[in-house]
Image (cartoon, rainbow, N blue to C red; front, side, top):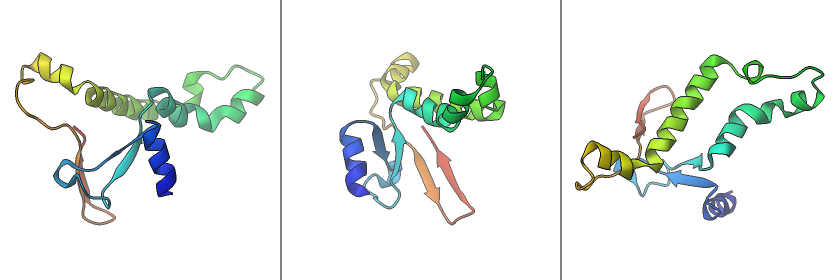
Length: 119
């Protein structure tokens, strides 16, 4: 599995990240898909491809998703946009001359509790 993950990272299809306070921790490392279209595809289209191919009627986007699921995706897409453009955000907000770090902070205590700050 590690070899596949490394290949996907080299192809820049996925990105590995760890919390800012534990950047070298393999235990806390997570992965995310880099490509915006692939994130959208796996969230909304992949589960419905057979239904789309066999549908006699047109299948609309609203029929494929729930409003709540789309709202969650929009939030994640916004976070990714902010991560990718942090330098522009820093410039616009006026702190680009200050040294700063970009990333997530998360801590998992057990299976039922923990915390996460994405950016």
